[in-house]
Length: 632
View 1 (tube, rainbow, N blue to C red):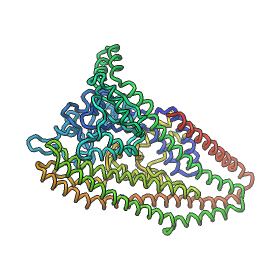
View 2 (view 1 turned 90 degrees about the horizontal axis):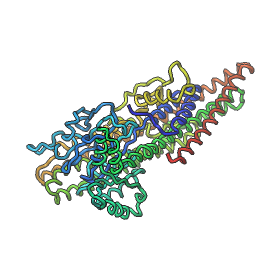
View 3 (view 1 turned 120 degrees about the vertical axis):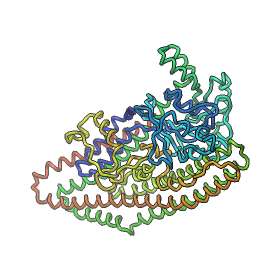
């Protein structure tokens, strides 16, 4: 099974977040407590996605086979080219599932059938010249590999070179949601212009990039000169300091075979010559831990925001117990502020709507620009391409349109994050905690890869009603990593909208577009393989025309739903805050009827809770600093 995060600070983060959730539960804010623990649970799940990219026949599939220790997992040969994205992830038993417009819910296949779905040549019926399995967009392979047991997912991609950029477009779009990029270069020759062009486009999309120089056993010592030239070509770019790993997949597989045969010394020699040990160490000990650190920092940020809200609630409770004469006026003032925020004419609604209208204009402009670019590239490819290039035109065009749609969805993500961040800053002064944008957006992300039921679930407390802070971190982690992925919703309010969090959910999040946009794309490619250039031109014009007709309303519907969801989330949190203030007033009246001696114990408890929150905030600040400074 997949293991929980092994980041050295994961236990400490889990304990401090659990302590904040405990306080929220005691104060009565069950929604915040549940959201926070689900956030923590998803962060503890590894789920790191590394996309493997390179031009055709650079050894990407062989590299993945060698990394996971399965010689014949992905089809490899000099005449084999991967045509769809293939995600390789951990499973206790071998399994393969295909997804796409023809298989929206996924369809299991045998591993022996894999070439018909992923190889450019084997996927075409030689008698009819037609696609054997039209509508396939991605394949997920599950295997029991030690490397993948910590949640690493390796994504094989179609070659990014060629006359049109469809394959590159969809691969670039996936980088926005991946955690790292492995760029594969052949050891027999330096970087090509098309490879450098791809890297230039990838610059702003992905932070962690590793270069792998394959086939060093075939290049003899010539690969060293190639490596030096590649360093020169990248000089001055942001990739100038990125690490390079010269490897031989063949030698790694021979090392694995020798190990299986019990020839340990021979296996060690071959492993050293293969160059794979440093690459495997980088993936396990650096890349995955850096990704885990980012997720832990995000959870700590959520915990810190909730502390602010909880402390204000406790302050009101303490003032009530102290019979503060100014409490009622202060609460009513805050109620008036919240009522103004909740009002349909509130400025935040107007500004949020304006932000989404501007976003819609941006999406329409980028869609039209992208379709024009694809049209020009496709026509150029048809006019100048040979037989093999022409065969690749339909899928490359389809990938280009799908990549464009996914890129537009990425724009929606980043813009919504900015808008929600603005709301967070604004409403924080009113004690309203706005969950992170990736929680609000997940409804559409998970719709493609398998949506949650939306049914409320119970607070995931340890057995016997014990508080989280009173059990071991091992029990907390076991409970959370089992509960969090299955949580389709939580108790009330915004909690009902919490699904599988964006980058931690199914692979459809990384490789797929949302349901409405995906449906719009699905009907564009009924006859994928034209036999003549004229047929390909007609198919291209028809596909682009229908894309212009179907994608804009699908994107508009998505934006409308996202806006509605953000508004509903904020409105529900405002209503919850109003209820808290109303209860504060009622408590103040009840407290006046209680004798002084009876108020002393509750006062001491509230003071202790506030002091505990202050200490937790100090611990959170310390953990933030350590996560940032320790390099993992």
